[in-house]
Length: 68
Image (cartoon, rainbow, N blue to C red):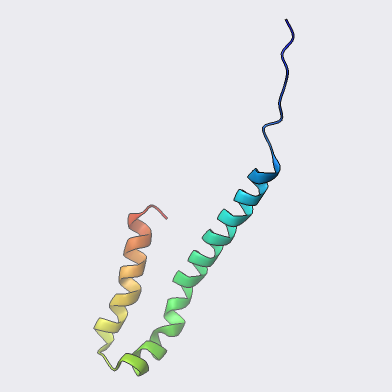
């Protein structure tokens, strides 16, 4: 009995891999850049330091909560 071997790696798997990589890269970059935008958030929203810093804290908490 002969078995026919079909290739598992198709063209779409590389597209999916590339899109997932871009998504993870941009999400990590956004989370890391929030410290840079902190001063801008203070100026734009005119809130206190604690309330403004909560935006970054909530973002990190959500990322940790979803297993990132």
